[in-house]
Amino acid sequence: MNRKIATINALEILDSRGNPTIRVFVSLDNGIKASASVPSGASTGEHEAVELRDGDKRRYDGKGMLKAVDSVNAVIAPQLLGMDPTHQAEIDQFMIDMSGASNKGKLGANAILGVSMAVARAAAMTADLPLYRYLQGPGMVRIPVPMMNILNGGKHADNSVDFQEFMVMPFGAPSFAEALRYGAETFHALKGILKKKGYATSVGDEGGFAPDLKSNDEACELIIGAIESAGYVPGKDVAIALDPAASSFFENGVYRLGKSGQGDKTSAEMTQLYQAWIDRFPIVSIEDGLDENDWEGFREHTAVLGDRIQVVGDDIYVTNTEFIARGLRDKTTNAVLIKLNQIGTVTETIEAVRLCRNAGWGYVISHRSGETEDTFLADFAVGMGGGQIKTGSACRSERIAKYNRLLEIEAELGRTAVFESPLRPRL
Ligand code: PGA
Ligand code: ZN
Image (cartoon, rainbow, N blue to C red; front, side, top):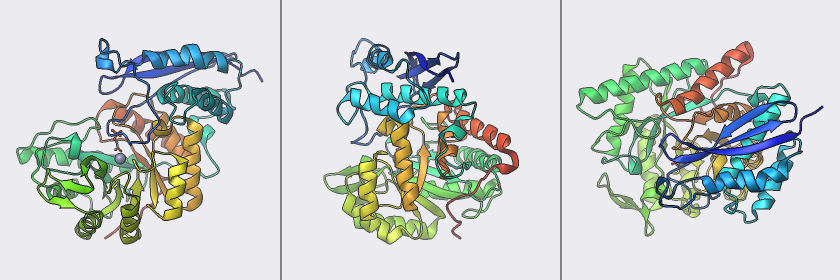
């Protein structure tokens, strides 16, 4: 069968924050054309693969992506022409080798990932398979439960809340469509409650509210109120998941709860604080509860909390199999956040998922705070079969695009669709 890569080219586009990012177009000699767009994080992990930006202050305050476009057009494309797009691992390895250093900074992880994703899409189209089916690993396809970030603090909000993300997880719903409805209704109920209390209802980058709350506790209390006022049972129908993003308030060896005025804490004290919260609120998952370099603290944190909740590592692993392997050895967490652009190729991301799955760990497929209308993530989450996706609140089209694609996939699969939360209710 004819299916060679005929052309590859890139275009500088804008992400949901109005910052430049990259879209890559791939065409095959059988006439198939595909494209993919790359997201971009703000609270990035220290060891993430490096995004190549121009640094030219005259354009987009230095954030331009013309160098990354050039990496694709002038360096990567000529080397990949004529290759078979279904040979994803080979193509990805070729780009990794071309970039030299392990952080992919030379060609740019953004340039490499754009090509990697667009190639996967072209290959799926050639095979006449939906992307989730084409990407499907050895496990089953499964429609993920959404973790919806509806309330913000930390660096994402100007208030007295130290923790970055308060998410609702409608895991008691019978289907994805129903889960999305539970989540959206809770989001709207929260908006009503905030309004009534005189709080602002403008939304942040991921679509969550960022009102001027008085404390961390108030955030959880308001969410419980919203779940109930939407007609659901907290902990049974809809649970809470947190991403404190603790690296952002870790300074000189202490966790500085400065915004809420709770003072400085050690790792063990942070874990105690989370434990008290888990006793009070229906929290089922905590991501980045500690700093990205606090491996020892995390081990203790997981030993204490790991059989009650899902302990997720994001910044500590940066979707890198070397770090995840260390985590598996040391029982650092019991789950991993998976972000394609933290590592920079589809193949390496699938490898990271495989490590988690083989170890019986949870994994959550995640967006970035800077996104595009691309829905690759939705198919990726279904194909990886882990049953969890983190892709923002119930507003902002770059987030909703992923949810709408998941609705489409669920409808397409019909009665064969599997929607089943890997996390169990805590009552
Ligand atoms: P980021 O934030 O995309 O800005 O890194 C999301 C997260 O911390 O999970
Ligand atoms: Zn995170």
